[in-house]
Length: 163
Image (cartoon, one colour):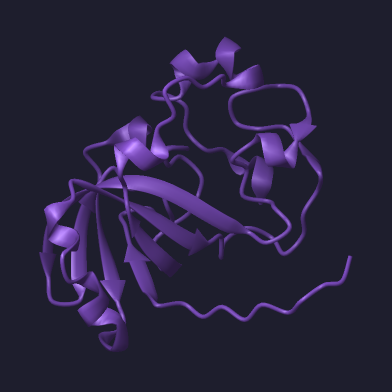
């Protein structure tokens, strides 16, 4: 398999009250009242047109606070056992790309105010996509190893395991 070079650049930055990963929610459902501000660069502001008709959006971002190393096996926040990295949402990944589904509060100019943010302040934003339940939520889905601990996701907080 040949490797193509992909060049991505941040289209903005995500502002949050979290100064470091430690202690923040591990998923947006863990703190749906936490407000964040997604600031897109001026060159991308026109791309926000019509997003205000959606209640939620998907944020794709770069895990800038995660070390520049990855492992194919990690102990995720919701388990004590090593799991394959692609079966987790752990930040130490080959490409360090994160995803969060957040609720849109308001959009004004270059800023999207969102609720349920779960990223470190200053996180580089790669993309925004509208959340569409008919596209993004399958009728039936299994959650693999997470079945045993899914009920704790709302109360679980990040610790130092991925620093």
